[in-house]
Image (tube, rainbow, N blue to C red):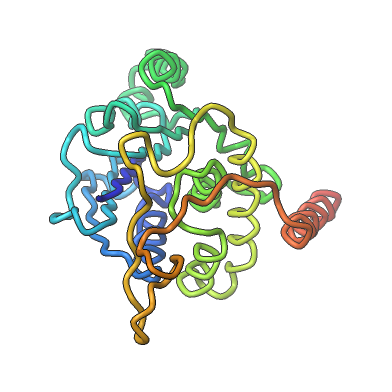
Length: 260
């Protein structure tokens, strides 16, 4: 089986980095993974779509239309634009904060993303709507949304990775000076995602088992029980005490900076 994740947004939102983190986490967990990006003509402001395909049944990097298990949309209009890729029982996580295109600036038409969100609520049964400004408020910048929204997906049980696997990838991939705050943003997203109800956990209805992990050097199955190559879905959960203390620390740090 395979699990297909489509990430979409506009240039400058960190969509590509988020997809690379997912691909690296899948590869580190011993899963077969393919990824590709399609980027608009404008480096910033143009549409960006990243495809991440995980599993032995994925033979090409591009997700066929109607095959995405999960869409993570950084902008509401891009979510609607990408809906053709979603399978009938797929899930969508969307940022409700819009980024107005140049045409809207030149000739205002009142675009604020609300109509797109309303359409998604009517069209998608497994939908999580988040607000990037609110989600990233305590971190002082929406630049951390790309990491925080991965936490939302993980917390809601929509990814076949443990939190520890993704945190390990962040440590290996993100620049050293930004590792800790990105880890905190991810954990905060996990907390938000764990509060979501009725979205369902990985795997989706059509997938009865989790993705098989590769064998390690000793012939044992990594991330699986003895005698089987299947990994049980990771259920959504509340933060551990250690994770909560880490989050409280950054909240205190941000509050002190605001006072100054």
